[in-house]
Picture 1 (cartoon, rainbow, N blue to C red):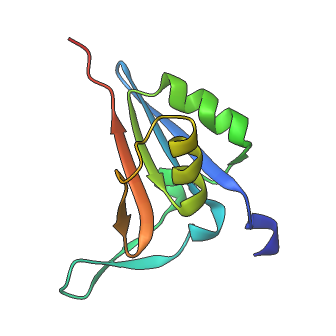
Picture 2 (tube, helix red, strand yellow; picture 1 turned 90 degrees about the horizontal axis):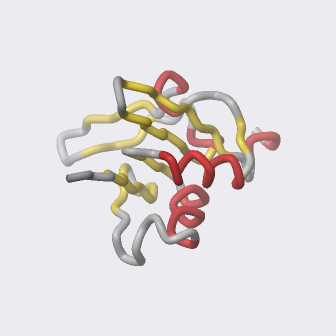
Picture 3 (tube, rainbow, N blue to C red; picture 1 turned 90 degrees about the vertical axis):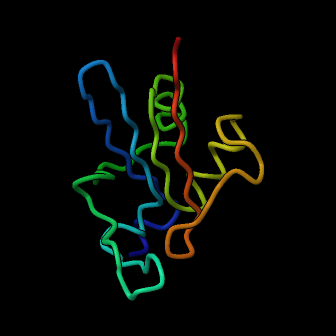
Length: 107
């Protein structure tokens, strides 16, 4: 686990013209987190968020090109906020973990 501390994992999903960035704090991969009040959980998976570790610079490069982004974890949401992609107070939580979604809409 020590090698994942401080790391970011990211996967880019390309769906037609969409460039979807899914990124999370690496140590979250494989965790089950509670959602809702009925005892349900969701697994934070490599299939969605990826397994390849990326630098903060590569993560921000991808965010600059994203049409949609799904961000999970304190590091990735902080980096997105500091770079101006997420406004202060505009993150939620998923199982107590900071979470943000970004959508780019063109006319």
